[in-house]
Figure (cartoon, rainbow over the protein chains, first blue to last red):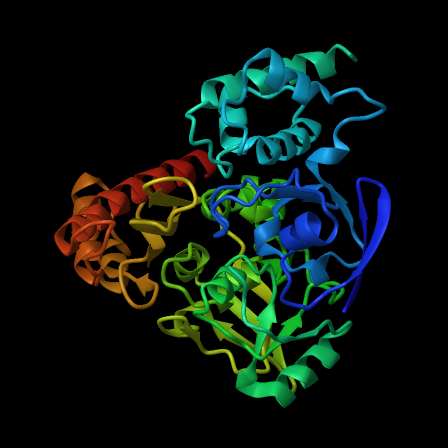
Length: 156
Length: 291
């Protein structure tokens, strides 16, 4: 089937089997390997991308379901050579160790801050409860999101 | 993990979808949120030859009060229920429930229709709908019918739906004055199925006695369980601590759990007792505050 999508603002199309998962289309067909495959069973959230602005686990969506829709992956966060404030936050607060969960954390975090620009710590922890970090880095991930929230509030 | 091959259909109207389903019969599965079906297909526990994607059907995602009921479109995502002011303020049992289904990202796609139609006793909406005394509206090639939640769940992963029927709406009776509800779930971690969970919806009479009460149990039997004896023990009574304890005990006796990684039978039954007590107290507090 022919699938047409806009990824990070760029139009792409690919001829795919209906059973192809969205994450495989993103990584293998389109070569955007920033999106990771972790558990492959919709638990870990490493494969999180934005589908029409909402975070979804791209290992649990068929590529054909994305036809005609907009996808944002971690590659789309940087704008004009400038990292997104949340990416800056992960750097400043040491929000990653191995980095495997980071693309998913970033995508969840970006969508969450849009919805809730002034979150409490509890709200942040609730928002990322579908994204697992095995380096037990949640403390710094929470700080990274708080860092970005403050930056975004300041209009930076 | 790669699912088995299938033919993909994306009908654009309800009539087209039900006609397709009627023609394809048991060879087809409906793709709604896909958050249960796709994992099952990846594990090859399900290998449908046809997928009928209903996400393109118009007008099936809404939450509104009409005709004495909360009407929820079958394609309504859990996140939209969670963020509905109407649900938060008027239907605390439903608000509690949709906040603990899977995890926040899964809830961006998961639908209420799919949660019910999957027929999994571990899913959370079924017990809530039993407690509410809700109705499920299904449309098939032959027309529309309303199925009471009490007769919807017929076996493990099996419902009263025919192969060509789609859940188009869920109707939850609007609460009368002095009503309250609560859903209390014990889970090992976010995203896990409940070790056990209990849904309560009740209405107090003007004199403070329990006029109406529904109690539903999650993941402690082959189907979601309506704890009818526990309900009967409370009806018409003053819901004091002694009555709550007795109802909680009866709910535990109604549970038919199996031992698994989440715990042995005795533990799960006792958990139902404890959670029923908590859910009843929370529902009562809400009913008294709201009334």
